[in-house]
Length: 51
Length: 559
Image (cartoon, rainbow over all chains, first blue to last red; front, side):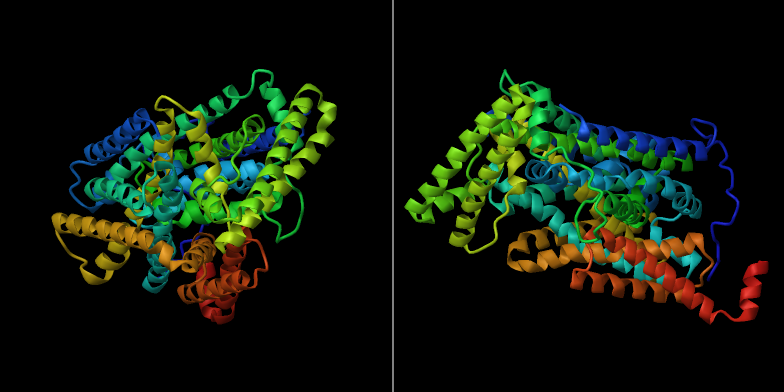
């Protein structure tokens, strides 16, 4: 029953399921990672801020 | 607690059960009972994913941890957004298009029935054993706050959750999670606001943060590269990434939430919503703990946070010895209070303040040592700090509301776990091996019985937890054994062309490595998932390469 269905298969477009923002999923993922980097930078700043 | 607090708590409990039953009415088959008919929107699933993950002990434990140790625990969540992106890009499309009920069902499509059964069994063992702890751990704290017995607390929490999960299934779980998560958010903002508002007039928020900073309570990032040191930046980023990949990508209690999505986009968005919100939310919870720490600079903290333990100590400790440690504690507290006030007025006074803090830590260590000598058991009261603060400072029903938040955190986790355990039992075992063909009504009845049985099991474990003693710790450790290898086999499934047998042997190798690491205490537990997953992938690839015949390899390459 092995199918050997790896990641290599092209992604099938979803009917009636448009990408909500930024035009493509990779761009959305990039936005999430940029946001994480900003949050971590903000936390580092908070930790070292001279209150 | 005051009457108003009891009223608020009662309204919450009755309201959430009634709402759960109402929102889950009309389930007709397994698709509706376990996957809410695959009709849910991203924001509801996103809140449900978050509510299932945040337990009562996360809520009271992390605030207590920030009080005693600072905000370092936050790094555990740094890998989560990265994991969400990886899961959305890899696993979610496979699960969604395979139209599966459980994540493990996909493994039969990709490998074979044996791999699916072993993986599902590992999940049932890991999650099934921990579900009792989910109920037992908060009952210890809630029993002290409410003045009930632990058993009564377990029964109230367990029965009220079981009622709506058995009746309404996943739809009830998701909608009650939405309400419970809204309540938890409200509770977090309320606690932060009140922690700031209750500071003395002459101490501003900036002063409070300066005091917390001088005591190291705002410390988050530690760049040490030690594998044994807890909560370093690297263990958070790498270990936290693998932990989140395992939990959100392969644990049925989470997968089942986003399989209920109306579309692939809705399922993906629910996880990305968590990726955006989770770190700031945990930051707020930990910041509450740091502010409670500052609050107890200007209000005297108790000798011990666990009030019944303190009452027992006062009865059984030698009076002269107890008085001596009490006097030293009071003196050290007064000195720290003066030093903190000085630091609030003049930032150059950090060093005298730190000396006063060390003196108070020393005085408290003597109290704890006395308690441990008198009771004969190790003492830890971190989980009691936040509830003590709530009861001491909140009035007019607000204490009842925050206690309801702790109940909500416990019940939302329990409901998701019961629902997912019942799904894996039904789909991966009952429907697969016992009764593949049945009517919708028969399936629904069997699903409800399964949920009720898991609920009864959870309560039984929780009620017997005290007698189980150190077995509970073993159960907790067992949970961390299984998730890395499960992640590894899913990685093999979606990223490689490894065949079924090497994948199966890979899981066994992964389990062996994690067990060895745990027994030898070679690394901090955050690294278990990393080593477990990598071992499965490495062994699976190696065994596959060694056992693949040249003609089969050629066949794969040209297929």
